[in-house]
Image 1 (cartoon, rainbow, N blue to C red):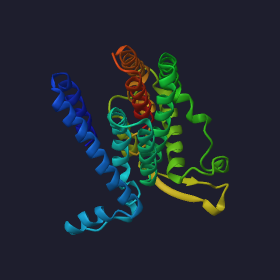
Image 2: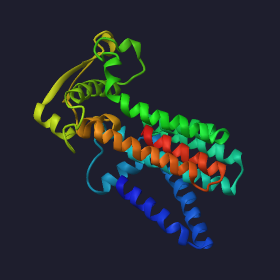
Image 3: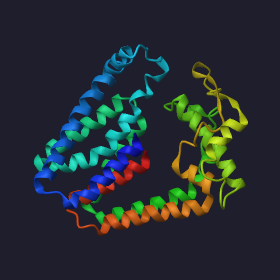
Image 4: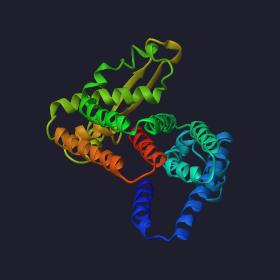
Length: 293
């Protein structure tokens, strides 16, 4: 579904120069309508324990697995966070800044209620980038370029600096067990990367580490007995849960250099594009939201 969304967006942008003004208005209206309806549906699902999902499953003769209750809205939250930026641009063309600000706050709340902390953080940081770019677009571009280079190059050396999920959880008491599991994964991936730093282990190699090593026994929060948790999981469940680390693991420094270059080219293209100030700022907001997710 996510790839389909990206292909659809690419086709839309490719066709947009050929659209008449009436057709463009239809696309804008469709975007406003779909985001409005989608937001209402997510709010209903997020606050009323997924009644529409339960209804759909009941019609198919199945019940909702309780373990899928929390993550069931995360894909929709991701789509909402990414679609928010063109939506806000179109909204700003038809309504005041106050309406745009209110819509932005509502979307943030809906995504947070839906249970996607990642998407909520991505929206928050995207908004910060948007506000900075409104005042200083060139400085924002330079700042983001630096973040891309430093973030991708430094990724393998950051996990060892993170607290041990078993014995140092009191330092970050607000993190969930799921988040602590990711810390375990990142530490393992970091060690693997240092074994083959130049070319990595090959495309899609991330999936092989879990299947080859079997499940590991993890213990979380030994230093906090009231919240201690044990879990059996693969060393790397499908992927490292971090884009930069996965690129390092599978393609090494060579792949990281290519990805960083592609992101810098995208930033440069955004800086040169003939856009109005708010549209350009929204582009930087979209860039940050995408990278955070």
